[in-house]
Image (cartoon, rainbow, N blue to C red):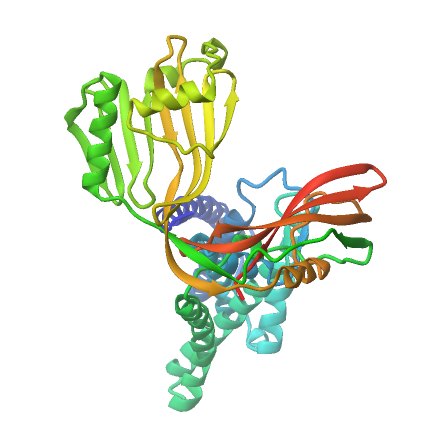
Amino acid sequence: MDIRSIMNLLIYYCALGLAALAALAAVFFAGWLIYKKAFHGSKKLSVKYLALAAVSFMYLFIAGCAVFADREGYQESVQALFQSYRHAWYYWRSSEWMNIILNILLFVPFGFLLPFWHKRLDKIYIAVPAGFLLTLSVEVVQYLFRLGVFEWDDVFNNTIGAFLGFCAFRFVQGVARRRRAGAVLAYLVPFIAVAASFGGVFIAYDAQPYGNLQLSYYEPHSMKNVTVTVDELSQPAYEAYVYRETPSTLEDARKLAYRLFDASGFKADPSTEFYDDGRYRLETSDGGVTFSMNTEDGSYDFEETAYFWMDSTLRPSTPLEPREVKALLENYGVYLPESCVSGVDEGHMYSFYIDEISGGYYYRGRLYCYIDEFGRIVGINNEVVRLKAVASEDIISVWDAVESIRNGGYTEYMMPDSYELKIKSCTLSHSDDSKGFYQPVYVFECSVISDSGTEEETILVPALA
């Protein structure tokens, strides 16, 4: 969820909160009038506590919506401490870091508002444990009623937020009472420490020559009931290239688009040309045929849109040989290497997987071609990326990678409780990281042997030394 979506949601929750507050205020003041008129009540309303109650209600309402709204159908699950931090690090998505930071900020108002209610609550050993117990209760409710998973990171982040909120209260209190500057400024140290911690993580990430591999993220698991056996393996190499995608220019996209339109017999309308933030698009005047390209990696789509709106059961089957499809693609100026692996789905969709080094570039990915009953190409989806070597790096030995597997350094997908992991072969490949580089990885083809049978499994291990 991006900033704009978060702000729109916050505005929506605020509007609902104000409506609920207005209704609650109406009921309260109606009851107050009855108390004053019918029962001749002598107590007076405190403007301070009315304002505090209104602000506290709004905070709890918005926080409650953020925590419980639109949440159902979750499976019972408990996530370990710092799991979300590890996931955010290896996947490196701004949305995940934002979620962590927002979870901290969510309880800052709690720690700030609580001491205003009574002077006995103006103690750090009360405010912070109170925040901890509240967030723990929220996680338990989410777990029991399947409104979310139980995340220890949420408890950790919310408790930090409550602590920061209490420090903010003490800072404001110190300024209002004109206490010594040094003592007041000391309450800003936790804010600086938290900001420095996140800043340190971002600086460390930027300082890395390459990004993080998603396959490095896995849940720790015990190897107590796992036996790892290895067939004879050989060392593929001791060095390997790191690659990076080579972007296409706007002129590259334009030339390719017009070439495909000319080959298909359709006329592109120049007035439909659009380019923004690496995205290029061109259409026919009626929008019946479109070309779109991501110039950052060179992937593109060329399709007759009406064909893809058709119900899949009505699409004709066109059994062609892969060589015939290649010949049709060559008429469009699309040439595929002999080594590519082909496949067909539903008769009309042909796929070609390419993993080849040619002319100083590494080509990798899939190209999909759609053909109608008349043998015409009606769609090309090219996901093949062109990679250029940027560095040659030392890699760990294949036996070091095997040792990583023996220590549980891989992701388990629905594995049995007890099994033999038989490593049969190993090859060297590449996997994209969070900075757009393609790093070398070992690919182990394995058999998972258990009482229920034998299944094949592929395990990837980072290879950079």
